[in-house]
Image 1 (cartoon, rainbow, N blue to C red):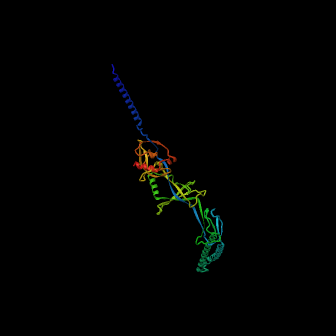
Image 2: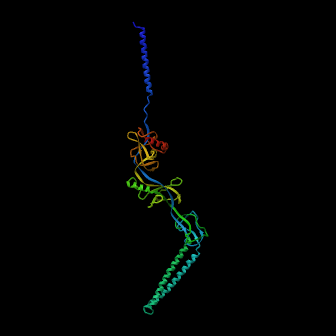
Image 3: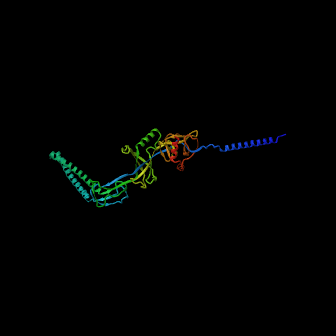
Length: 407
């Protein structure tokens, strides 16, 4: 016979065990819900470096100067009677600009003509005398001294004719100088004299200036260190000329607009300016619309050559460390972030030309720089850098701070 009390105790123990099992299962379920999930791998945008053909250019300041400049000056003394041009207008070669009083020079010209006629008359007389004496000296009808005197007079008469011709030519030139004409074709500036002014040849009185501005020169300066670097890169084969004796030049005007015509470099000076350490370069530009005027400030972009093996890194992917050295973060073969210290050559648009620190095939991080540090495992995603991406990129301070922490 079963004891009721024992049966009751057995049932109570079963229920207690069942409740404990349910509690353990509940605790196990709660433990699973509170376990932290594994962190996701950070995604970064990268560009893969490949050698490119890049034109190498430099931007240097310069000023325009006229292709030809002629200062119109007085070459005779006299009163200016007329000014026969409009200031700021275009003039042609030989066009008369001023009229100087020619009365005294006309009188001198006529006097020289008379002197030449007189010399010719004297020459004819002594020539006839010498001709008559020639058969007489052969017949010993006159002395040798008389014949020699006749020959001397003939020679002196010939010289007098030459002097008279020269004086007449000088008088003709001076008379021509009373009509001042333009020596070149171009644009004439302001007049420095007015009708009634007295001008002097001894002081070479400046009357006006004519400038030919189509084509027009642009004079720029380049530092001697840049010239040495350029020659070294050409010697090492890093840089090649764009063409034989055809270095092209582009202009940016004072208002920031681009000049529509391209010029060519004419020459490079052979001397370095001691005070500034620069070399003067001169380029020639077409100027059919007269948009360029002498003395204007411009910026010239000179194509020094072409680099066929250039490594180009977007500027958004290059930062600077605490020492000011340019650096970049790359993703290695194990998808880990690595820091590289770079040597940059120059800027090319929105990119840097890198001389060392990177090589072809490296994946440079250009997006997400502020979220990664060297040694982190990341997920690289190939991207294209655009002005919008660059503008939305990390601030320089944040990137520099990240680089400082990485070090």
